[in-house]
Length: 130
Image 1 (cartoon, rainbow, N blue to C red):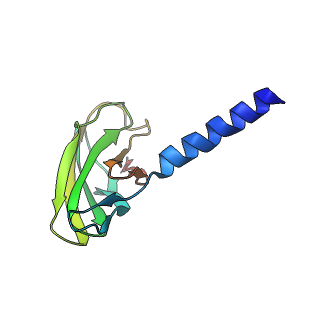
Image 2 (image 1 turned 120 degrees about the horizontal axis):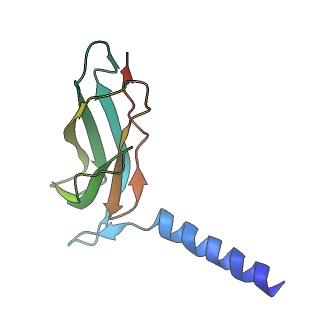
């Protein structure tokens, strides 16, 4: 029974870490990220390789502050941790390109992973390559 209690507490602790909490601005206001989105352009690529796919995204925050994020790819690569500075509540854009060569039959995607002030992960943006 003690073993199950420890496992339950560990799961609960991890859930709290995942959800995280909001940061506070210099004025004491709550600052958090409420959304991250990413889309592939073009969504459908037909033609020879390499395919050049542009990924356009947004990150939405509740006020002024800094957001740390990275864009992660299905092959494990990422562009490193980047910082966006919000002057107030709103949405800022992010973008990247991926030159896809080789077989078009493999599943390939990118997503945004916000690391600070809270963890937020976008849906995977997956272009369809023909």
